Image (tube, rainbow, N blue to C red):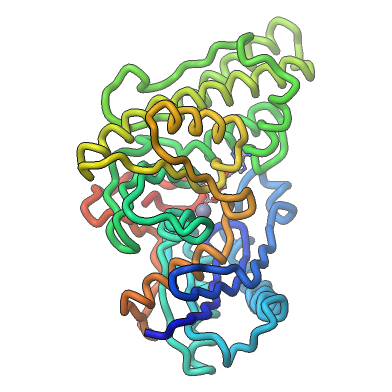
Amino acid sequence: MTATLTILGLESSCDDTAAAVVRVTSGSAQILSSVVEGQTNLHAAFGGVVPEIAARAHAEKLDLCVKEALLRAKARLEEVDAVAVTAGPGLIGGVISGVMCAKGLAASHDLPLIGVNHLAGHALTPRLTSGLAYPYLMLLVSGGHCQFLLVEDAVNFTRLGGTIDDAPGEAFDKAARLLGLPQPGGPSIERTAMEGSPERFFLPRPLLDRVGCDLSFSGLKTAVLRQRDKIIEEKSGLSRQDRADLCAGFQAAVSDVLAEKTRNALNAGYHMAGQNLPLCVAGGVASNATIRARLEIVAKETGVEFHAPPLALCTDNAAMIAYAGAELFMAGHKDDMALSARPRWPLDRQSPALLGSGKKGAKA
Ligand code: KG4
Ligand code: ZN
């Protein structure tokens, strides 16, 4: 095993084209560069991510992002030890673009290729940012995913529970659309909620009375729709304050559900691992300040450490893919030109198949 590993990472599973260079030296990681090219403007007119447009944009931008990431890292491709790429789950056209680009780079420079599960990238982020030791509890909350994971190493993940319908990011995006706010919905709702009162509209807290740590968010979005229509019927339109109050009420409901289910998950994790587990959160929704603060309180009350990545590493990025690739590489894992793109790729190999599809394609 090399003492110092330099990994180039590629990410293109949804609507961010990203490349990054991460260096791992005796277990400690350093992000040498992280380039993220978002596609928000390309999808703005459609109210959501259009898979075909996303795939085309990834294919156009990937090599430029790689070039920029190497330039910022002051590294040449020849100095890289391996190429890591998101091989799923996600929108298949985008994932294929990334895998093909990585294969080209690996083949032309005779470099090892490592296919990384996008969810593992998010789940291993606390190790990249703070060198957190295994095991820990991860709440992964993004646009396409929502699950509590007991993380034991780079390949062993046990799903303790998760959403039975929408992911919270998906709910934020849908609620924003209902209120005429721009996409992505999470940041729009968070911004709008700052001027609102969470008490004016009390929205449901689905599954809160149920034991365990499964969650549900689709009813919440329907409740926003009903409240919106009621206001429009009464006042023939939504005022700025109505919107802000609805956003604050929605954000409070999501926070309450996540906080309560996290208590249950910490308890389940304790029984499974036989020890108190540090609580970590990752994924786009983890950049929400209200949610972070609520989870921090839960961790404090339970007496466990709390880890939330810096905002730029909550949403999709390639540094997390490069880091996860480094861990896999150090564990002796390698792929070859047969690496395929997977729309669905559950982290927990025992987890049952989920039906339906979300923002990032088939649900994992
Ligand atoms: O992890 P991510 O970049 O992509 C996926 O893997 O899905 O997460 C994107 C999701 C979007 O649904 C977006 O609305 C949500 O994360 N998000 C937020 C915030 N920032 C992004 N949700 C709530 N509050 C935020 N500040
Ligand atoms: Zn993600």
